[in-house]
Length: 222
Image 1 (tube, rainbow, N blue to C red):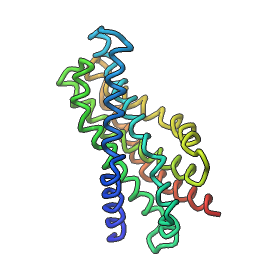
Image 2: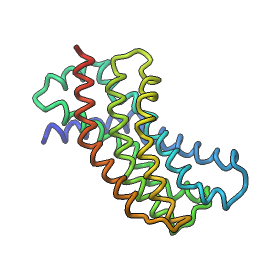
Image 3: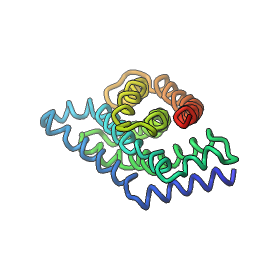
Image 4: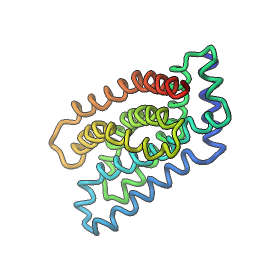
């Protein structure tokens, strides 16, 4: 457990030091949300209705933005080989890196969501529910992206392959995330069932993601 915590802290420090984690994701999220009103027009009612979908789509793209570097730097400096040969199971090491990535990229997106929601005319009483769905759903996006990052780490131009592999798998998370956020704005659909499925997706990917990513890394090293 001490090695797991040490690896988690190390990856968080690297993400903060490099500056490509929270700052890059938050700026990209801001740009996506800012451009949408210009594309759609000044219809405040329409922006309010589709606000959760815009926020979810922006969070999806922003959370996947830095995934291509999740294993690339460790692969380049040889740290990945040490992790694979270490005493800690590779699945735990991969899970630690994924959690560190979510804490430095996914969680800041949830924090700034209420501010960006004001730009889309989303009512304040609804922003709490939208933020809650992002808090529950962004871990699923992170662990799904983890698999794509592990598959693409040993390939040239793996970023394009990662996007092709990962984006279709994130569609269920996007569907249920928006379905859970919409009742707070347009109603009268229930909030509980889609939110429960969203939480289940995050828990399932938390288990499956590190196992699949570790298998992909082992296969890539053979």
